[in-house]
Amino acid sequence: MKIALMDSGIGLLAAAAAVRRLRPDADLVLSSDPDGMPWGPRTTQDLTERAVAVAEAAAAHRPDALIVACNTASVHALPTIRARLEPGIPVIGTVPAIKPAAASGGPVAIWATPATTGSPYQRGLIEEFASGVAVTEVPCPGLADAVQYADEKAIDETIAAAAALTPPDVRAVVLGCTHYELVAERIRAALQQPGLPPLVLHGSAGAVAAQALRRTGAHAVARTAAPAPGLTVLLSGREEELPRAALTYAEGRALAAVSPAL
Image (cartoon, rainbow, N blue to C red; front, side, top):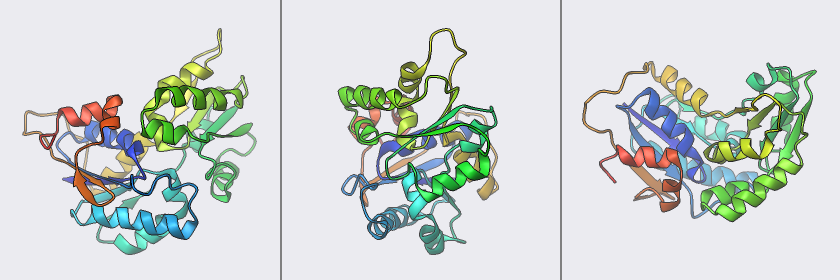
């Protein structure tokens, strides 16, 4: 089987690694837009046009499903992408994991890009799934870019700035941008309060990977001795290798390690 994932940048690595854990035999197509990122500051029309182009580049490789592994694209462009590709290719969006985070009873913080923080979309999810729970929306300007380029100093600075805006009694944090999942343990270390139970971080990678398999009618399988699956990397439509920055993260190294294309 073949699963495609799209994002503005390398935030899709977390979901791609989750797909590989569930289906180590699956070929992957990773389609991103380094020429056009970040998408957040763009107008909705501009963002949608770029997201559709990235999606169509992935669709040209005839995947069994496409994961929109980007919160911003899911907020603004998901209906248009689905209109272009479904029913031929199932399209799975990424929704911030507010529902499971709120189930703990709170308090909850939602770390997201400035474009998503305070948006009607995110506020609607809070009203639907976290009514009666103390929720703090925390904008994280610059964090996705810092992760994208593996800028260690900028990652530390942007995490520290967001941590300063996060109430110390928060017990669960929603990682509302797929890039953030690549530095989840650094976020945990910045927020964990001495003497309190371990902070729970809620990402979306596992859920969207499982949903992609459900939409294709596939099931998780154990790793076998079969030939290594393929990995196709599309950067703004060009077929290239995995960006060097991706290898900074465990998810990127895991994908590269089993992919003969690299």
